[in-house]
Each structure stands twice: as C-alpha cells, then as structure tokens.
Length: 237
Figure 1 (cartoon, rainbow, N blue to C red):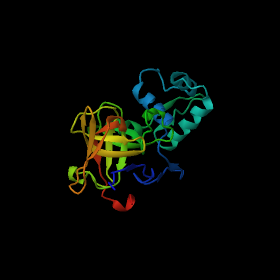
Figure 2 (figure 1 turned 180 degrees about the vertical axis):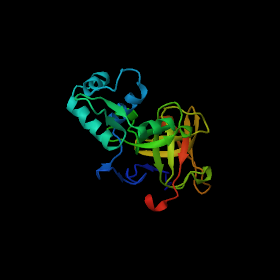
Figure 3 (figure 1 turned 90 degrees about the horizontal axis):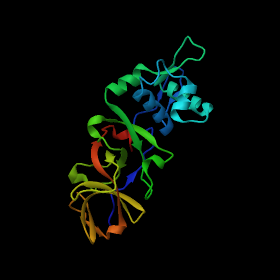
Figure 4 (figure 1 turned 90 degrees about the vertical axis):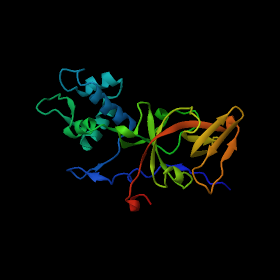
C-alpha cells in the first residue's frame, strides 16, 4: 500500500530545549493569546504616551477578564519578553530588550501544528504552539509550520524530520508542493497536478507512484514556501 509522507506534531520541546529563567521557572512556548498580546505591544508603540497598564491593555484587546490578562502577562514576563514598569503603583507593561531584538532580527513565531481539520482555519485551533521562523522563509500571507515524516519527497530535497513552512490557502498552481487533506482523513505533502476530472498527488521519490483522486477527495490546506532542518538528529528522534 502506498505510504504517504505524513505530517505530525512533534513534541514542542524538541525544537529548542526547555530553558530556565533566573528564578528557575520553565520558559514555555507562547499561546495564541500571549502571541496576540506581544504582537499588540510590538505593533502599537505610539498608541499610548507611556507603557499601557493592565486595564488599558484589557480595553485595547477587548478582553473582559483582567485576571486572565494578568495570567498571560505573567507568562510573558517569565519568558523574558515583557517587563513591568517599575516605580509606579499602577505601572505599565513594556517590551524587553530581548523582545525588541527578536523583532529587529526579523523573527516571527508561526503556528506549529499537526494538521488542520477540514474547513477549520488555523486561528480556530486551540492547542497551537509557535516556532520562530526567519522572515526569508515565510511569505507575507498567513503561514504555519509542519514537520515531515517519511521519504516520499526526498528527491525534492525534503527529508524526514525537516520542518516545512506552509502558506495557508485553499488553491495551488500545478507543479507546486502542497499540503493536501485526502478524503478528510490523511494529510500529505506532494506535488499537485489538477485537471477538471482528476487530481494527481505526485511524490518526489522514484520508488513511489503518483496517486489519482477525484477533485472532491482532495482539499488543499496550503503551499510550501520554506523549509528548515536540524542536524541534531538525537533531538528529534
């Protein structure tokens, strides 16, 4: 039976070992809400005449619970990305030098997921971790990251364990490498060729054959735009 180059969600600590802050607290990956807060602070430096307070951030982000925001801010402080403005009883929150440096270096964290349910946008997935991806490896459209398992694309230079950066869209040109959901059950990375009555998913491995499907059997979930690889194989096995 034909073996797909399936994609899976690697344990999030694989990409970058868990680190500790000065107090010995584990620095974890950001949640979607924490990323939203960090992006807001980065993208709106002139919105406030001084670093915003929790109440001002709550209002700006449309959050009803100040306690929930406090929890996310505490996680960002633990990660070394924001810091409270000292010397004031109701001090504001500002970016740390580390967060500004990451922004200046063109770093952006993209969602790192296993697969997307049919018809569900990436924003609707609750348990999403994030991975830092250089600007040159992503497009200006929404992107996400998958890790490859299998050898069906080795002749395209895509190997088992590589991370691929996928531009999220539901259409592709013939000859592009796509993430395809086949019969709503299995995700695969393949070249695509489309005709009115047939879709071919083509591996880049001479020992494997192309597979033909009716158009309604294949849902495109994105197109390959970038690729990353670690040579520290012991960390991803």
